[in-house]
Length: 161
Image (cartoon, one colour):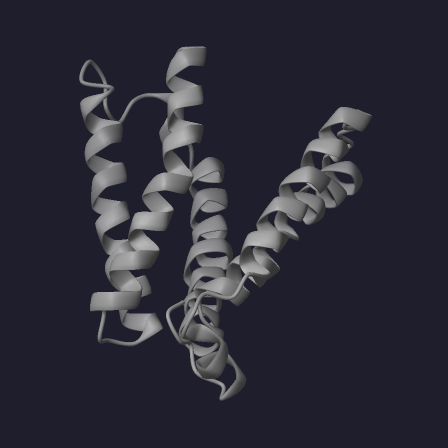
């Protein structure tokens, strides 16, 4: 993957997640667990197809299918996607998108902290400045009240989130 493709993937990810939030908030009638199972199944099929298509010369003979790597991938999927996404989607259902997005601003700091202690990674001061500015921007937007949502928020509803 080229650097340009990496940047495009990074930029498109939040946009696609936002579109997913809107669709989920307006259209999904099932449980967070059912949505998570649907997403996980769809992603698994897509991942399998892409891994085969991108390695047509030897789809199952490459280093991708080492047992240790596959085990870590499964463990990561269970912890991060199955458990983490189910909890996240349930939070989205209970407290609404605005509050979940506000709490999500902690992710970069938690990632930096875990990266430091587990992987020995160090970030420079500008990375932390960027995280703080991003968190401040998201916080300001998340705390804004639209007309008509203040009453619903006070009453415990999701009101327009």
